[in-house]
Image (cartoon, rainbow, N blue to C red; front, top):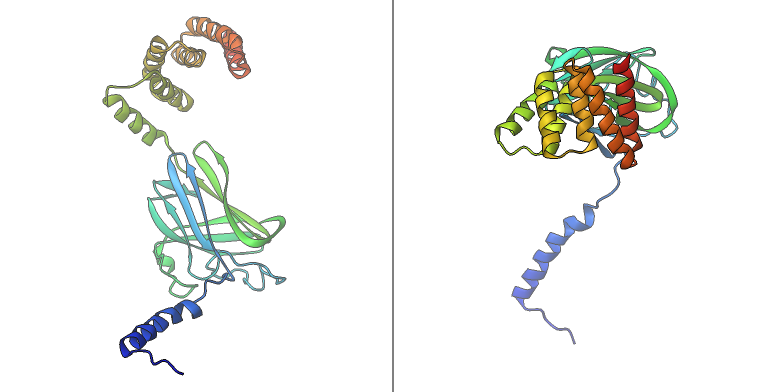
Amino acid sequence: MRTEIPLPMRMILSAAALLAAPLIHAQDLPQPSPAGEVEQIVGLTKVDVEYSRPSVKGRVIFGDLVPYDKLWRTGANQNTTIEFSGQVKFGDVDVKPGKYSLFTEPGKEVWVIHLNKNTELWGEDGFKAEEDVATIKVPAMSTEFTETLTFDLANVVNDGADLELRWEKTKVHIPIKADATEQGIANIKAAMAKGDMKAGGYGGSARFCLDRKVMTKEALDWAQKSVAMDKKFWHMHTLARAQAANGMAKEAIATANESMTMAQQAKNEAYVKMNRELIESLSK
């Protein structure tokens, strides 16, 4: 015997079926060129690259799929973007903080790199060279085979890094420099203004300035305060460096010797070595 479903219940079931239909058909499937992202702090600036990652799949890429000396979106799908949280030097061009699209013209020996204001492009259509904020040239280099287009931020040293692109057997390096000296000094001054600086803060501020050869008189004062608050061998070493930077060689040697003795007692070979090298350089 067939059971008749009441009309209100039939309406509810029909609505449920309609809502479920998109879930059945709109499946979450792998993309041929999946999204990729790489992020790195350079100096004090965050660099963030977002792109789509096509694969070789047995094809010839450069000179065929990607023609030489023609504009390329440098990825797949929507244009590749790169965002800087602070001022940078992109190649040899000063670039303000912001988000930009990255286009290239791959050549056999040289690539032309375009950093462009328009970040809403799909493919090469709509690209305008007059919207570039930087246009630089970098050499193309041979490398080990890379199946999937890969961006990386390599050679992260001091305030610099290389934006590295690898695909097939080609790679390019795009130099990025983000000088942190000015921002670092501003951060130190802001921290000092609060009036609650600890020994580590004074010592770190002194080391920053000594490393960059700026504000050495202030660095000496901060190093002295760090030692007065917490006499540890690492603070003593910083004080020795600050004394040396201010022409106080005799005092620096004495401080470094004391720091080295403390480091030996703590069995910290790194600071023993650094103090010994500082003493030797000053003794000359």
